[in-house]
Image 1: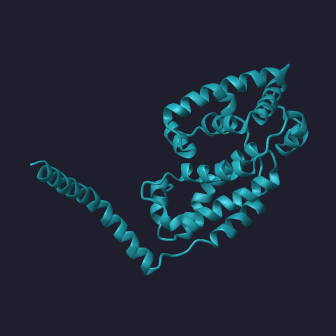
Image 2 (image 1 turned 90 degrees about the vertical axis):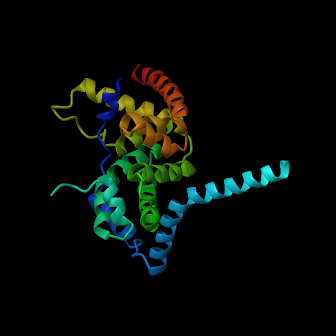
Image 3 (image 1 turned 180 degrees about the vertical axis):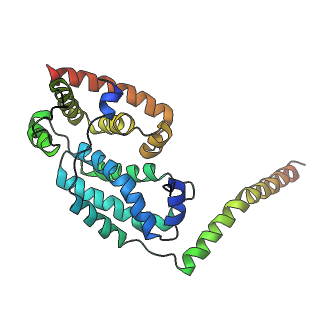
Length: 71
Length: 182
């Protein structure tokens, strides 16, 4: 038995009407983004960009605090 | 016009694009169904879980990450649903119903050599007899041809762990195939 044998296993048949019913049922759950979604998405992207900078600032502040404590 | 890539579909799905949803469905539903059928060995449960997978996908479409891999996302959800419904079965318990569900009761076509049909039948039975954790690996890697990175994402494992588990699963599969083909 090779991977070729496994890859060439025929896919189980699925009734086209059932496949279509599932597609339509699931598609009902799809929704358009609201203004809140759009705003949140922008916030997430913006946060993704500033996150490394914020982490660096926090690290520098910690270092300063540690050095002050030692001296 | 060329088919949109998965990344393009993800970008469109994040805007709630129904056409992109249909394209994603057309691209993946048969593969997910085949995976679920072979994981669960029951047509009606596979259909239920296929629907549940796509409902979750539709509900989560707006939250897909830009770099989300569609296949890995769908297989991960389907796999988690399947594992929560899985119960172990012996080859004997389900063999006939399973082969019938797969269409092995249909007469072989002239192109379908007897040896090839026997081997396919044996592979399906050996797959069905594998423990679910091994079966999912063989299905994702060997049957469906997912990239190792994607498989690691689906199973939430490190690539190295996937490789080790896959080796063991292949060994078990060979032993089982030997038993089935005797």
